[in-house]
Length: 184
Image 1: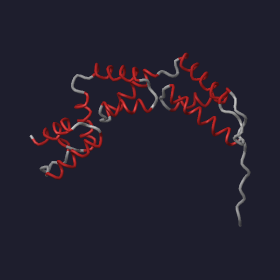
Image 2 (image 1 turned 90 degrees about the horizontal axis):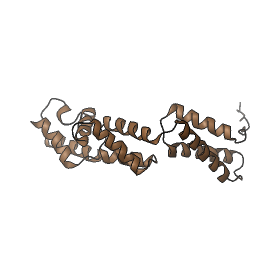
Image 3 (image 1 turned 60 degrees about the vertical axis):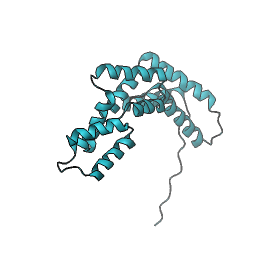
Image 4 (image 1 turned 135 degrees about the vertical axis):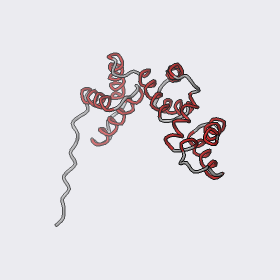
């Protein structure tokens, strides 16, 4: 018995309302900045045009997507500052160093001035060195240094821990401070 494929169903034609709905659905599921929402809408536009043969011009739909994102920003649904602050807080709590947080936010399309503002807000909330606190959270999560199993650490354990800190983006000095705390 052979299974028959159902014929490919063409999507309904693109419309401003469909794009707006897609943007709002995305924002309902994820926190995002302006650039991310634009990227999502651009992918949707390209996918829908490709399904209909790929001969339609993308540029008018890109302008519509930009207008939709501007409306969402004006209504307060998209806020790059709030997104950057929240993302920076969560990455810091997960044990990411400032350099990695800065790179992550830049990859998400957040402007450099907004990134620096978010990191300064993070520094205002924290009392100690931010990278040292992040390294401590990283060590706790990965069970390194003072959070390692209770056996005495060997040279290989120390080397592995230093490598893990380096791959995570921490400086040697910070990694050494965390590891030496465990040896004391």
